[in-house]
Length: 257
Image (cartoon, rainbow, N blue to C red; front, top):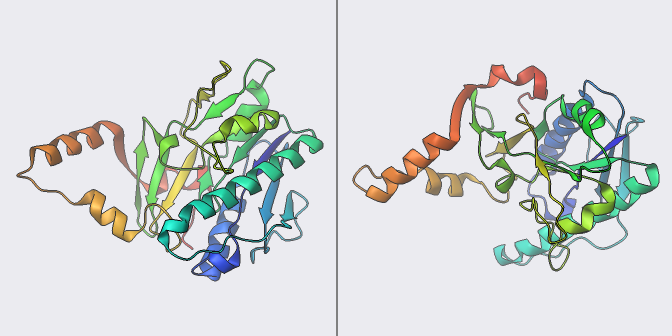
């Protein structure tokens, strides 16, 4: 059995709980669209989001007993990451008790391919530690297009780790920081690249921590007279492919929120 883990932020540190709940609902719906039904969803949280899955037998909400992070300014973002890491660890330990073969971490505003559970349950073995989502899509909310990242999606989006739950500690640095970019470990184990695009990273949805509107403007600013800007453009052209949203709608169960 595969277990999907959706760590959910506290209402106290969420700018718009209604939008957050709708995005989380879409995320859960995307996971529930798996072609293989041998899975469960664990949602570690302080408050249960307002979704249509509160009584769904496939979904279990795990209420955290520790306090949510107290944020003073943007420099406190590490507290959010530590909070996320603690929730993932708690859910992974719970997944072990459930007999899970693998767990996948999924950010609450993202969507995943409906092929993942079937692939993992078919290809998992004692010799395979897990997979990382090397290819994935970046979706500006509300648009009719998205970008396929073919090289390093796992360094951009947290919805990218599939690993045996008993190995979850390998993903951690200091202070419960869950490092989703890790694919190779000091003990010689590693995460294989998933052989197909596995996730959609929701951008500009109003609750992003990393790629918000300000950051996107900064990254997409282009100066045609700058040699460095031109080099950056060619690097992006080598890494991204522009595709219509309709191309992936069914597979990822994505819709406007």
